[in-house]
Image 1 (cartoon, rainbow, N blue to C red):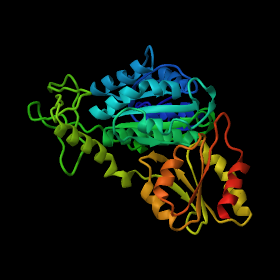
Image 2 (cartoon, one colour):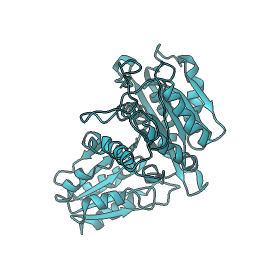
Image 3 (cartoon, one colour):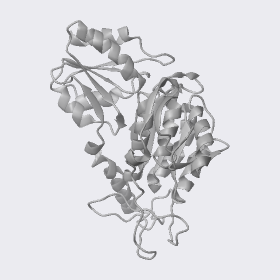
Image 4 (cartoon, helix red, strand yellow):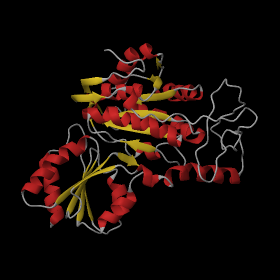
Length: 386
């Protein structure tokens, strides 16, 4: 493998999704990964461990997922772009530190190659069963960003987007793959480094003594950063804290902090809408999907259209924040939505809430282990037209 000086493996390759995600992370500037082996995500870190020494980075296999999820945050404050990689059981162990990343506004990317659960489940089989956990799994109120690719090419392209969003909003960004996308091999085109848009970390230009760690303005709710060791006196804590980063055990401080951290995402939710729309204008039924399920849905949609049904397709690329305004507006134009997922009905709850009874919402759940048969989605489309 011959990469350019910035580590970008330029050219056309045949890669599986796990390997493409690794290449996307390196191209985005990720130089530190901590993780613990877990199927079906291990190939991401195996490739990273082999590739990263050539560009001056580091992979460390920690003793478990708990240690991994805090090691990456220390590296952020040391100046690195970082990632951790896991699957469902490991993600469950990371939840407290995900809350810590939110509260300390530590930009980092978590890759979750989803498999069947609960518990150990089916380690080598696909599912989309962690979609609600990433949003609500850590205690407290918070907002995150979650991206769902449906191909190895998107595993590369959207990984760069994930890192850019983590830096823009200083929050955890989740890269929600599934076993099929992680292990399918397809053509992946990787551009040269000069054609890849990278969002730099927003480091302050203020001098020590002039800088306040969590100070923001009304126009920009995301604070600037500094690196440990650069002479700034900084303090990070999971406790409720003031703008200096020091614990502030008051209701007022909690309200101020909570409001800003929530609003820096919610007030920018319109910028974070990424839904790939196909023939939704004039459709009677719109199929909503994400990840591998979006590719299965295509077969059902094509057959439905061949039978004369007016069917659109809305594919969620960014799942969190959920694009509720888009679907609320679409709900007055269509008869029904059909939502297949490799879970027993998780994101469909968000759709149902956004639609608010203005159109039918038909969930097409699947316990995982395999993908849907297209006929099952087709039958739901036909039912939706009645």
